[in-house]
Amino acid sequence: MDTTTATAPAAAGAAPAAAKRLPLLDVLRGVAILGTLGTNVWLFAGAHGEAGPLLGYGITGEGPLGAVFELLANGKFLSMLTVLFGVGLAIQFASAEKKGRRWPGRYHWRALFLFAEGTVHFVLLFAWDVLMGYAVTAITVAWLLKRSARAQRAVMWTALGLHLTVVALLTAAQVTGPGNDPSRDAEVAALYADGSWLDQVRFRLDHALVFRIEPIITFPLLVFLFLLGVRLFRAGAFGADDAGRRIRARLTAWGLGVGLPLNIAVMFAPDDFVYLERYAVAPVVMLGYIGLTGFLVEHVRRGPVTAAIESLGRTALSGYILQNLLASIACYGWGLGLAARFGTEAWFAPALWLGISVVLLAGSRLWLRRFANGPAEALQKAVLR
Image 1 (tube, rainbow, N blue to C red):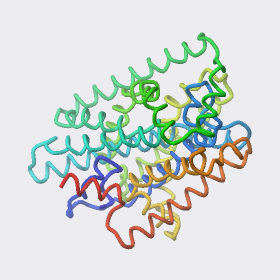
Image 2: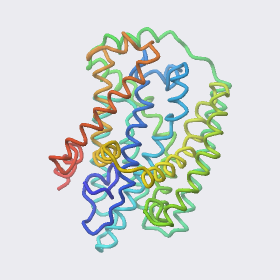
Image 3: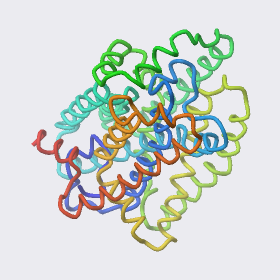
């Protein structure tokens, strides 16, 4: 897949040969996949599996290592992945304009196929799938790209205002609402420690609406971040020229200079501010991550690690699905059942993250030596063709 394409749905087809390659995008996508795993791995390693947040447990674990992962990963890379989807959408739109093709045209089929992939991923593997929400957002924003820049800005900032209002209301409800009811904890823990794969599938289907609540309540944020990705791409934020460097420097200053201190402050606030941390502060820190990654790509000599991250970025959709499959096999009772044995150990989740990350990096590098696309990306292309 050409490095100018995005994770998905843009990953469904290679960018036109005439498109300029932007290597930074591949690195960012690889970083986003590893960072997303840095949050999700704690769900798999926890006693209550992916249902932990629904029972009132934190997304990351307790203790110093859990705090480090929370500070560095929680919400940041989910936001980065969302922005990169918006970048991919902008690339597809630019390609269609250049070739004189009708827009959105066949793009809706790509988004529809992504929604189907996300549905299968949700039912069979991981309750907190992001692909379904991205597909719906992609269809919405695709139509907006036909409108004027003024209309896009209006929608973008209105969506942000609506999102911040929702976060404020959720935070208020969290502060004043009842505490967690632990009566179901043992039953849910037994499901993930000893239940079969089919038991977990049924559990996801029985609680589908609750598990799908994140993309529903954050839909305005998804729209904002998609449009932000479009604006950053059109402004040249990912280019290797002086304009791109200036934009990335500003992103670094705002994201790390303002967002990171805010994130630390929120972490020391009561647990009731969890929504504020993940859905309001984390996207600001994410901007700093984009700028910092761009700086490192330009100033650090390209070696095997950078090449492996690029490869993972080129197979990002496959990597996202594979990381959840590997974590499920490692942690749940129908697999190796390691979470029941080592889940309370402080080292387990970080070690699992490291092990799966190595597999993803090495596997994507080896795969692309023989194939042009990742397996999930190749399936998309074959079906849509």
